[in-house]
Image (cartoon, rainbow, N blue to C red; front, top):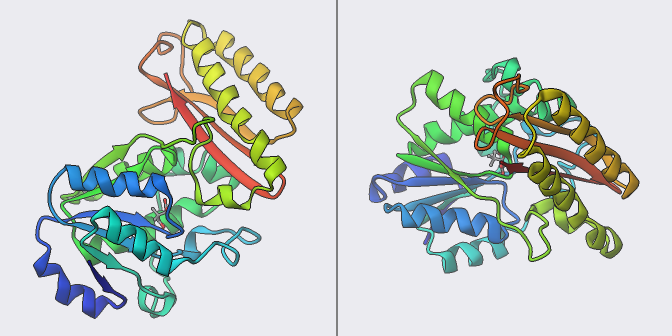
Length: 280
Ligand code: PAF
């Protein structure tokens, strides 16, 4: 496995890795990231992993400073996972001058849910992903479905700008008790960790119930009950909602039914923010 820290070294290395697939990450890797690498390998072609904690996508007061930087361990894991090339730039390399040119994602998709709670988040994500795509020129890139809205925003960006890059979605990887793997799970105290799986349990229960409903009003009532269950279980709820999978719009009559919708939620447990989703 080759590791490059600069754009110049990346440019020099890329011709040795034609038809590559990119797995963009912010490091602090876990089994969810390694599943993305395995998916990239399964698709064939060399696998490039980027590791960069992107300041632009963190809001004021968010966890940019405490976000774990674990490069040595990440590289060991990637070596074992069969990654071919790692691009791990520092901030000066990625943003040698203030990044005043930004991607402005469609507010209809990027201004709701995570975008409403974290203003500017998807501008930061799309700007860095655009830059990573430009620097690594992959034929495909793999993203996890845990960040469901991120996946949709990136798909739309790639489609609208006409990048010749296939976006591959990978299922969320979960602990045995249902908790979605996330770098932020490490912030949970043991007591919070023991309560955290209730988040997924409530979302999965809502998806199972909503799958049998036909009217938007009945969906709204089921959502309200699920939200109340989360508050009762000690979570601070940023949102719980049922949306169309295609564009995250609210489903209207005639659009309710299996295979088209997704439950999305974001909660706070102590100082940790968790997001998850369940398609149905
Ligand atoms: O999903 C993430 O880890 C980040 O948002 C990404 C896509 C690597 C961009 O910084």
